[in-house]
Amino acid sequence: GLLSSKFLLHIGGFQLQLRANSDESVPTLLISRGDLCAALLEDLEQRHGSSGRLHLHFDTSLESIDLAERSCRTSGGKALRYADLIGADGVNSVVRAAMAQ
Image (cartoon, rainbow, N blue to C red; front, top):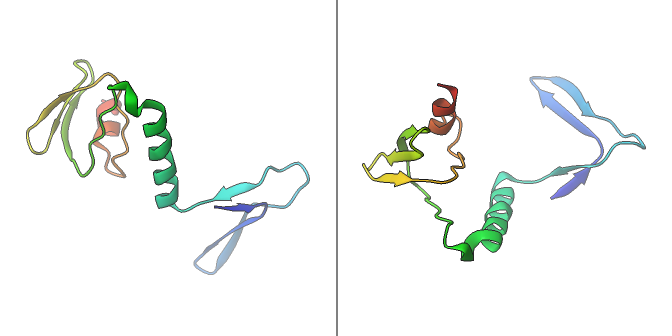
C-alpha cells in the first residue's frame, strides 16, 4: 500500500480535494482491492482456519438466502446452512437484498 496525506479525485476535468495535508490528519492507505482481499483472506484463515467452523465458497453464486432459517441455496441447487454469513458478493448482492427485505 501507499500512505497518503493528500488525496485529489479527478473526474471529467474537475478536481475534488478529498483530503488535505494537515498536522492532525492520519494518513490514508491506498491499496489495491486484490491486495486487500488477499490480506483479509490470509488473516481470516490464520485466525479461524483450524477451528473446523470456517467454510469458504469461491466462484459460487447464491440464488436465495433465508435469514430466518440461516440457510442459502446456490445457483447450482446446493443447500447450505450457516452460523455467520459474510456477503462479499459484489454490487448486485443477494445478501444485501435479503437483508433489505
